[in-house]
Image 1 (cartoon, helix red, strand yellow):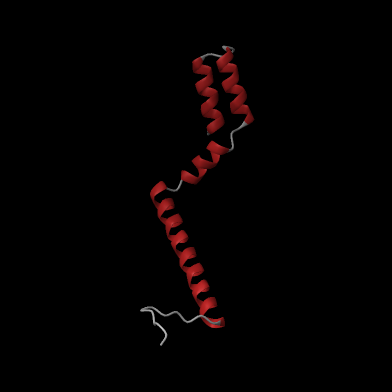
Image 2 (image 1 turned 180 degrees about the vertical axis):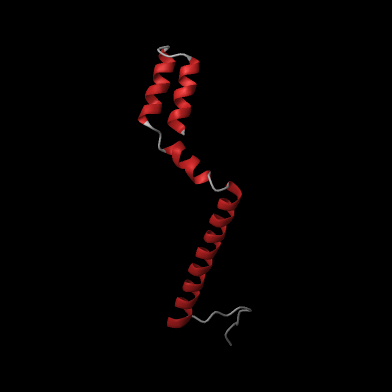
Length: 86
């Protein structure tokens, strides 16, 4: 007499596809919820600040280099930096 397990699964052409599709849809929904919550928490300008942090301006790099070399003073550096970041 064959042993029966407590849990039996029925696999076939329809069950496997439906399970995979349901898992994919659930995964997409969870990711979408996480993205929405993070954007709500971060605020409307977070994307702009993050983009600016990763895409630095060559002009800002040059300004920082000139300040580091002592070619410009702190006040001039801060004024020009504010202008570049505006």
